[in-house]
Each structure stands twice: as structure tokens, then as C-alpha cells.
Image 1: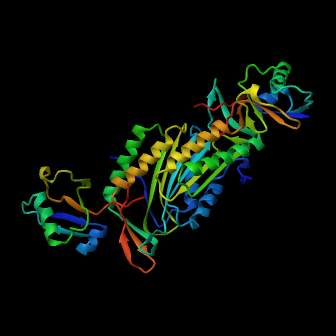
Image 2: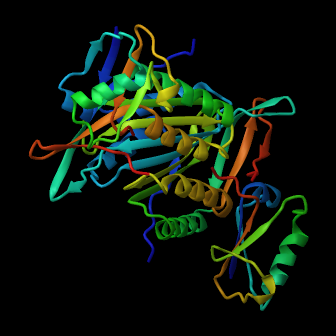
Image 3: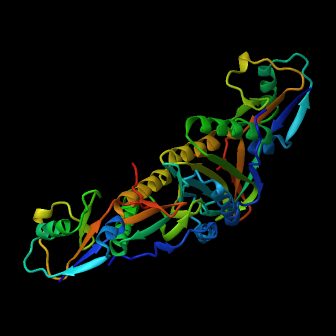
Length: 78
Length: 78
Length: 146
Length: 146
């Protein structure tokens, strides 16, 4: 299982704050493409985090069982 | 009458916080020389102020009746 | 394990809380200079409508991780005695304080740059999200400008 | 006539006074950023003896004049909403706060530099004098370092 978390403006589009998916050997890139195909997030500048770290290069990252992926809208702290 | 004010480490040497002198046509330079001859202020870096403004060039400044001269030790605010 | 400090405060940061933080540092006899940054919610006007509050949420696990990195970073880069960061969560009314950065050092030289640096790192690197709520209950998602 | 503000406070500046100053700015809905500098008396050690307090005096007429110049200067140079300067007079114990600079602005960009600038101007241009008092009642005259 992979946990996907949604925040702020994104959680509003997905209408949920998290969901779990079966890994079934998908790559990180495929998981992200799947999220983007299921939800209309084109108007929001997105960042992705894997296990609390911002993902810089999607291609190079492997994902493992129980990983946590977060879809993050622009930061607005302060 | 000219009022001369002393502060901090300088008031300690002069043993008073102010004194008045007769002007009798002395120049600012002469008044300052007189102060320095009467008190041992050599070990303290001094500034002079005339009517609350730091004196940059002693020679060029005229003094008038009721002026206030201040003898100031290093500033230590903050 | 990095030490996780209590950073997030439910609701506004009160002036009394700030006073208590200051008072706690008065036993530290080697501190000569404090610098404090406070973020206050502005009643900005957007297309004729006024912001009345910001509702803050965060990705807590990542935010705490990032904040402890920012902390370590600041202590490495600047000669600081103490450093504290607090951020509000929940609905913060216009005029209320939502962000408090508190830097202390022996001498003043570095405190300004340290504060500015920490504030900017929190704004750019910490996953905090804000919903600007207007008078008529409409809202827009806040985006930090640089 | 320049407006002379109440700058000098007899005794230490309390955290409660700072909290009240902050609270007074919470009705100003266009302020987004505050920056506060606090000077705290350090228990420095000089030749084995500890400073227990600083006794501050000033040349009040000139100090007020200079402080209002610094004020005007800061408002001309930086985009500020509010600005306050307070300095203690009398005997301030180690650990107590003797200097409080409070700068507020719509956005944060300029507040750090404004605060630093104001602090430096107060230290170099305002005739305030300090006597560092040691444990054994001996003392030395303080000189600001830059």
C-alpha cells in the first residue's frame, strides 16, 4: 500500500485528504500520472514529496511499500 | 553667560554636571582649550556639542550669549 | 534523531505568549541582542473584497522535519545563543499574529540576517497552506510572493 | 517643530511593556510584518569580575533631537507603517532589557535593514552614557564597539 496525501487547494479538488493505492509495481512517475489523470489539478502549481522530502527528479526515485506521497500546493506560511 | 555641560566619565573628572562661564569675547576654540586646561580629560575620547549639535570644525563656529556647550564621552546606548 | 520542538500553535500567537518567551531569556546572562520577527494577518483588499482571516493548515510531519533542518542550518551559519520559531494553525483574524521568529545572540551583528534568513526559509520550504477568507465567506488560496 | 516622543524609560523595559506595544498594533490592518530589536544587559566578565548592571544616563535635549532625526530619516529611507524607539535610563540589571526598537511595515522586505540601521544610528549618534557596574561595586565606563 502507498499512502497519498492531499493538502490545501489540492485536497479541495480531490475532495479527500488522503487515499491509499495498491503499489502493484507502478513507478513513481506512473503514480503521479495516475493522480493527475484522475483529478483536474492543471490550474495549481504542484510539488510532490516522497516520505516528507520534496521530489526533485521523478525518474530517479524508487518507491517502496508503505511510502507516503504528498501532493502539495504553493506554500503560504508566515 | 555660556552653559557648559559634562556627562558620564567626564562629569566624574570635572566633579560637576554643568557650569556657567562669562563669554567675554572668547572663541569656541578658546573655551574648549580652557576646559581642557582646567580638567584632565586626556584619557577620554571627547566630542563637543554646541546647542545639541556635534561640533565638526571648531574654528568655523561662532558662539553667542546663552549658548550651551556639552562635553561628551563615548556614546554607549543600546 | 533530531529533536522536534513544539512549533505549531492552534490559533493566534498572543502578545502575552511573546512576552513570556522574552521573559524566559532574561536568565541567560550571555545574551546581548534579541531580534524578533512577527507576521501579522493583513486585511488586504482583492477586487473590492477585504480579507478577514487566514485559515492555516500544514503537512505536519514534513513541516516539523523542515523546521528542524532550518534550525540546524541557522545554528551552523550564525553565531546564535537561542532560536525559536512558532506558527499558527487554524483561523487567524486580520490584525492577529500568525508567525513568530525569535533569535538571540551575544552580540547584535548577526541577528538581523539570521532572522531574515529563517523567515525566508520558513516561507519557501515549510509546507504550510493558507486560505484567505473574505467578508462574504468567499475565499482564495494564499501564495507567498518573493 | 518636530514631535518629541517619549523615548526614555526609567528602569528596565519589561516584557509586558513590549507585549502592550505589540497589542496596540493589532488594530492596524495594513501591517503584515513587525521586526523588534531588544538590547539585553550582558553579565560580561572583565578581568575576572562580572558586570551586574549598567547605569544609563543621557544628554536628554540632544538625545531627543537626534532620535527625532533618526525617526524622520528611517521613514524617508524605508517604507514603514510605524516605528518606535525606547531606551532605559537608570540602573539596569544584567538580564534586563534596556533598548527596544520596533519597526512595522506592510511587507517584510525592508524591516530587517530598517531595524539594523536604526539600532546602529542610536548607538553611534545618540548621547547615552553607560557605567558598567561590577559585583564588587567597582565600575567602568561602557564604550560601544562596531
